[in-house]
Structure formats: C-alpha cells, structure tokens
Length: 105
Image: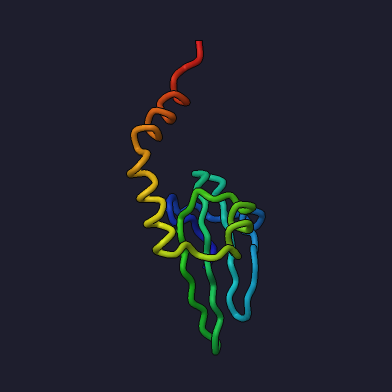
C-alpha cells in the first residue's frame, strides 16, 4: 500500500515511511519521497481480511501532521469568521503582506 510515491512513482524507502498513530484498525502514516521530495499522508484501514487506503499529497512534515491530527476540525462558522475578518481588513492585510515581501535596503 505504501510502496510508491503518487507523484513520481519512485519506491519509498523504509526509513521514509513513518507511523504517526493508530486508532483501532486504522493507521495513519506519513511518507516522504527521497526522489522528488513530496510528502503523503496515508490512512490504512484493515477489516475482516481486507485492506483499504486513502492517500493525500501534503506539504506537512511528519511533526506537523502529529501536531494537527488530534485537533478539532474547523467548523463552518470558523470559516465564515475568517472570511468576514479578511473582508473587513483586506486592504490592511494586503499592505502588511506587501511590506513583508519588499526587500530591505
């Protein structure tokens, strides 16, 4: 299940596959490809002799995935709040971002 990188098809080396957690018959893995550098989160579920998996290409490092995996999911109201905040303060937000990206002389 965790044999090949979904981006470049290179074979994962054993040291590139890290078990992040287990809950019942479900396991969460983080894999980093030595060939292309892309990472993947994989959930593997074993039930009644069958194995199912879902993979997700990610930019998360393994330690980030560990930190985020047990957090509560965002609620729709959280998304609406940030949308309203950005809408109200978008000009200031864009100015702040552009100031941070200007080269310092």
